[in-house]
Figure 1: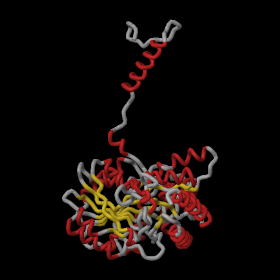
Figure 2: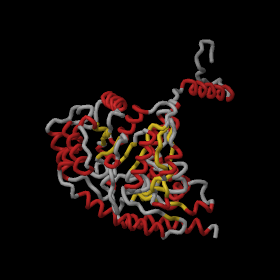
Figure 3: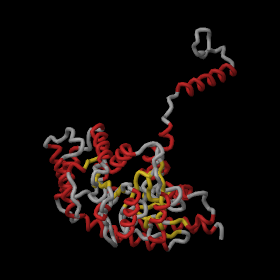
Figure 4: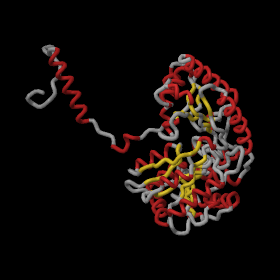
Length: 436
């Protein structure tokens, strides 16, 4: 610096040492002035979308990547029912483009009440329902409203990553309970009992499950409810895939509950093929135990204004209009599930349980035992760069019960799945041949 406290400016008399000193001082000043991100943000990582970044780099080079990573049916050969799209266009043109009520339009909440009564034989009040910006916002608001520092939330392992991420963001602790791969990824009820504690604020159930595609049996759900009742903790039931099933029936958790408070998440993204509309909802089923949490939830909901107004109105017609697309979707997915299950189990070094719902499959990388990769993320990136197939590493869904696996979607047409699995098989043969 000069005597005026200003940084040096270049001139022809500067030596190399002067220049290096100037650059060092400038860099130190940059580090001092750089605004820091919050500590809680440092741990945020979302495996499902993080793996897209290296895939995009390949695509910039003109390389075709087969995407089996994200659960968006509209990226494949599925489309939103026409009457929903027509309604969206109609209400926008009719001027319904302002704010909606914070809790959501009453007509939509009443339509959800009718669906729950008809489908699940549960009676809700419209006041027990809040429309949110997807299920993710329901989860964010609920955990903001209910968790304190060092509280614990029991979540399935493996699980949808947002449950772990948002719990930790609230300075609470996600506790993964085991799901049993050999039993189609059914929850290990004994492990839930072992891990429940005085700090447990809830038990999460995701049925059908993301990432495994497991469809929980009535027996298992009842056993989880028994534990919740014994320890007087609520059950948080994520049922966003409830009507996407192949070989069995999905039982709504609140249907089987007697005196256990249930908080249910659901929405329109998956069953009604509108993931980009971001319309979800939460339902509170209790006898007064959740009054304080429900009140806090609604206050937070008011503070964030509202969910998308025109999309809410179109979703009313989703519930009131034709439902025939659901069986057509399930028929297509059943065929793709059967193909994926058979084909993956034919590949040396890979095995998989059979999913019964949602649109995911969660194979085990048996070849990990050969120490060809240090972890499942390295496997996924290796597969991407060599075979140009994109899946998601299982440890991104649970570092304990998801490791050594990967998640793939069964959404693409069979021809695309066949191409992807052929590439996976060639990749595995090449890797295993090096150690034979």
